Image 1 (tube, one colour):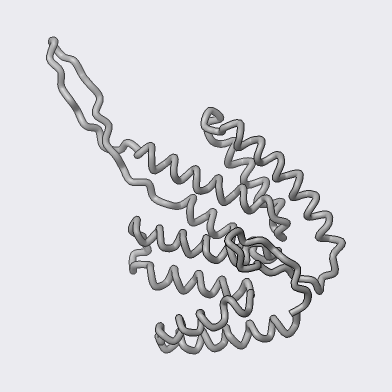
Image 2 (image 1 turned 90 degrees about the horizontal axis):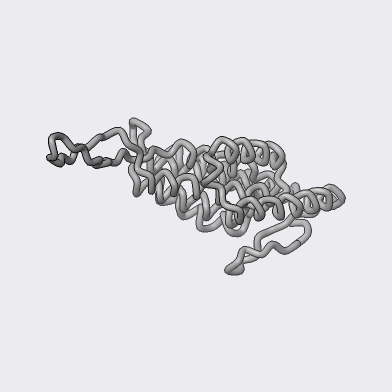
Length: 220
């Protein structure tokens, strides 16, 4: 574990130096060399911060296409180190990012009848239902993935998720979603109790399979 930590610190120092001098091409070359060989949460956090930096504007606003790029970056990172117990802050940041996504304003066109004449009147300031639903679905998907992993902050994430679901219109919460969470909650507690019995020198890495199946590879 100490050796892995030292390797990660060396790569981080290298990245910080190149980024300080705005050598973006070299930074990206370093990422291709170290991310997959050293599965360090700190390295992947640095990668995420870099992606957000090069895709952000001066006023901090994100276009729809840019937001999609950052969402994919989060998914990519979590598919690689999301099962690490120390990756909890990345899950929390992803949820915060989705929660603060701006939803475009749409138009509704109600029918108003006056003296037997029909008029179509457009009212702005109405939330686009489809985009709002997509936002909720994305947040629910990430929450459900996170609370199924024995992360260091999993209890906090579970309480946060429970409060968020309760704050929504209960009609929008499907039975399948509730059942899924109950099953995942049971599996989480089982995994968490098992994890406490494991040696702290054991780590888990993501095997490069299409399903991201974890396998125990022992000490680095």
